[in-house]
Length: 361
Ligand code: IMP
Ligand code: ZN
Image 1 (cartoon, rainbow, N blue to C red):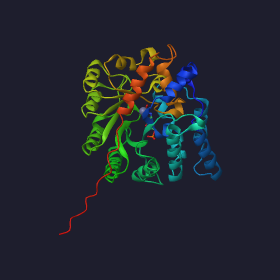
Image 2: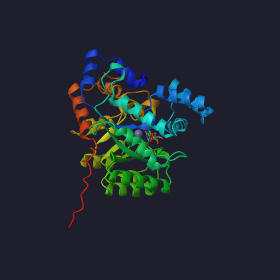
Image 3: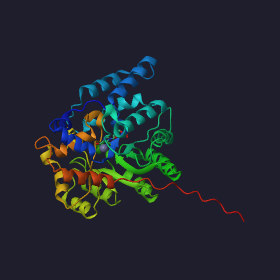
Image 4: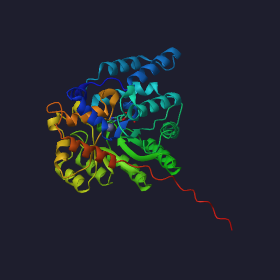
């Protein structure tokens, strides 16, 4: 269902011996940074598109064009080009049946056994942004996704709910209320993320919502310093939370790096994503090298969006093992350590909420 991979991860994987591949497959891995709508297998999207075309439900040319781009392989000049890909995907998945279908397909891609291959990972923290449309409220959106996630064991899959930089305060408030209520009802939400087009970032607008979620006990991860244009006060504001993990953290300045190191905040590293969005010019220049030089600073290797990037978690690990210039040429023992750090950086679901029975006099 996951399909063939392409690009730098595919080249790294192809350069490995069968024994190296078996080694990478054998280590327990956690996928902690995967966006639901960015991780849908293309075959599933194509089948939804065919269904939608036949029933003529909301089919339009932008869907055909969007799917063609994804099938042919996305060529991005810069990260800004990336966000334009999503509207076509969203217009296919605006009802509960399709949302449940894609959620299951994404979970199976990561933790299921696809075409007889071992699972990509042992544990998946899937993230998604609740969107309302004429068929559902943001709360209903989350309920549909959670209902699928909760069919799987709690030590296999959990949900992180994303707030998006482009949200208006009213949308963020609606999302926050849904997140907190569902969390307090004992549903399997483990954290809150902040994502979306970094050019639309406005830290003062969204920080209060993250603080409120954190005050209710939710772990926070934020896409931080994703581009060179993200300003220092935004990075500092986000680090002040403090977050439990960081996404990308590509352009942290020295002061911010020192703070992250001191506070030992795990960093979600998405190598193919950064190369393809051109926020890293090459593996040799990738900021992961900085963190690997630090004594035991936790990182986790993640895919970000396997639909446009056409990568896989195995391919991302291949980028660690393959010899330069195709990969970083790390030792197997180091890769085992990184995978273990990933597992240890999970936002574990808390024990089920205890319902205390009222005492009778
Ligand atoms: P969704 O939250 O399930 O709809 O997943 C897709 C969304 O994730 C996109 O619309 C973006 O807002 C967000 N996203 C995916 N990848 C990135 C990234 O690298 N940086 C920031 N946001 C991202
Ligand atoms: Zn991301």
